Length: 335
Image (cartoon, rainbow, N blue to C red; front, side, top):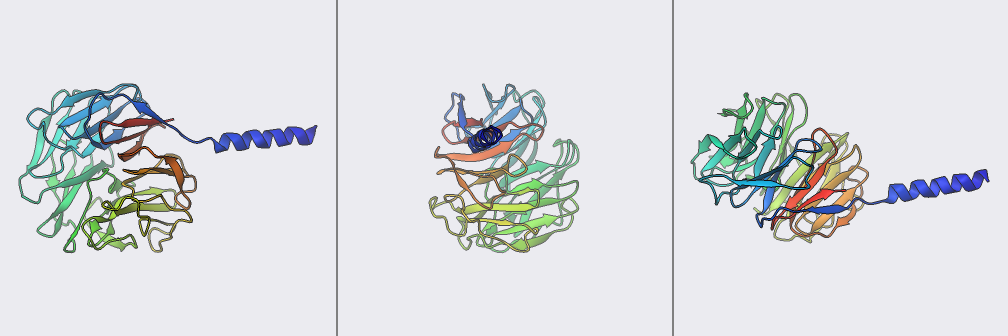
């Protein structure tokens, strides 16, 4: 009897651990494409994207409320950071490049920064805390566009010591996850195109070093599109956005901070635009052709969903809520 009980317990545990996550569709009633996503906690999350739309939920994605930014109805807001149910910062892709802030749940927006240079193009933003944040963009005159805020996004100051990039080296505003504030002072930014590297600062952007990566590069459509750090693992996803199904030199991981890069035993099923940790060992990667999951921090991947057209996945900073979003108004909650 003891052996029977042990066998049943093992089978039950095996079945539980084998259960897969599922994507539950959220109703948005819009056809906009979303690439900006910020999940605050288990209830509050924000979306931003095309048609000048910004939306938020206060019930964990069961329903969404959308507002169109007045005067910028044709703008694509690909960069987003939300503090709570009322306060958020957005930035658009393209020139003129604007940063806007709301304090009333997205009903009204105030423009706090504008760059009219023809090459101005924001790719993503992140914050270390409620006051200190950073936003980056494609190079202007060879230097990465890089700004800091010290007051929660009310004002922005361009950093003088931003990295000098190689010709043809830029970034992708694909999911907002080419930038990560990783610790109290550290930040990491990925670039792609002709050269694809990781740029690292340990003093909030005052000084920079960089790491070379083996990700496919050399063309304007290639490189790192997203990265994540989970425990000791540093995980890269990307590829060539013109060749979504090609699974060659598109997915790597490192266990020593990027000194050595390893190819997953089973990589993602092709080009991916976003990678996001959801537990201490579990990581999701999504892109236009589907979503993959790894339960060992990027060493092996398997298919989670064949849902097409997704661009971004983010987990709550304070909680377990995970949301995925993409084209044609598609938003999903991970169950």
